[in-house]
Image (cartoon, rainbow, N blue to C red; front, side, top):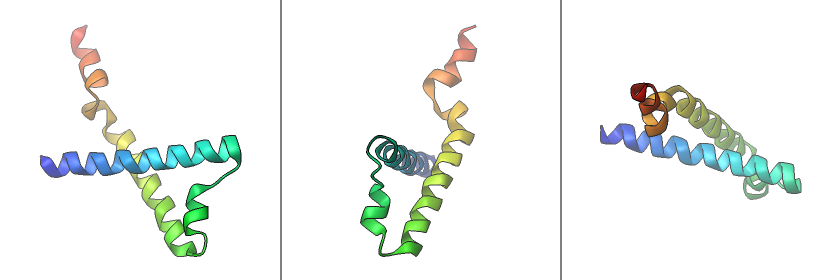
Length: 76
């Protein structure tokens, strides 16, 4: 089970990096990933793919991983 927790933490971290980057783009028109990796477009694309994969994983497993969502149905 530990590997599942580690995968969840990595996916969550990637999703948060993506969310923060989009927040910076929206508020300040500043793309941190592009600033850090702009000279390496292949690596930049890989980061975007990993962020997207992390978000999909979080969305797919959220119901069972979230203590609020998984217990909400049990209280009724």
